[in-house]
Image 1 (cartoon, each protein chain N blue to C red):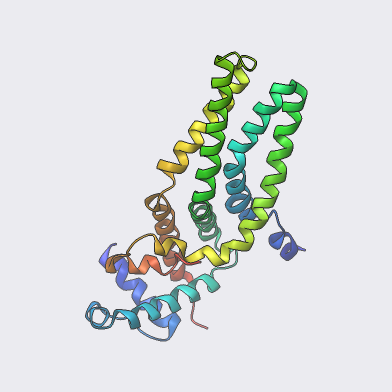
Image 2: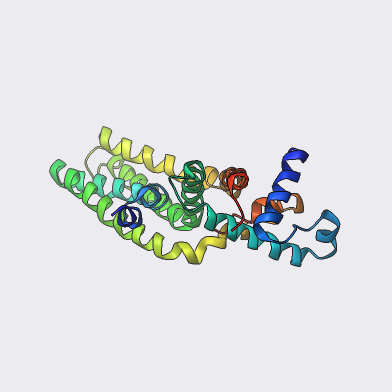
Length: 152
Length: 94
């Protein structure tokens, strides 16, 4: 982050929170206390930017982040369902090839492709790094919105 | 009125961050139901697939909303956040 922007954010944070953010040295000496200050400021910023009409960009990034975070939270279930579905579809296709079921049609193939694609997404796309991109965009937007906030 | 609209089950956040997630989770299973239904009849497949998708999706969306608060710190447990990124970490546990 640009050091001047960062300094401005720190000044605004101190004004809003009524307490200066820790310096790099203070944070190095006592990271747990520094975390408490950052958490408190995060809580404050979220509360002050709840209004979706006043802060539409913050809300938009919150939605994006929520979508990705919830997908990550559902990864185990999603992967299991996609893997099970793919296995069933492949089993049905094998039965058809062995002549024990009707021949698979275009619809069956489409369903199988969807299942394989979804399994690939769950395994390789939905990762912590993928969530982090949205988390950082949300954080950026939240910090930018702080510039328009006034201490109460 | 506006408040009720925002707090409804299908407000913007619920649609995008919960319902879409539930749909994506359930999509492969609805495909299976559709394909198995096709084995019996085209009509059954056409009916069974959307019905299963809608039913399970609504269930998952509700479940997702309930579990969301409990799971919210999940991202912070994904890995160590560096000191330089600490300012970003403050908003990860919404």
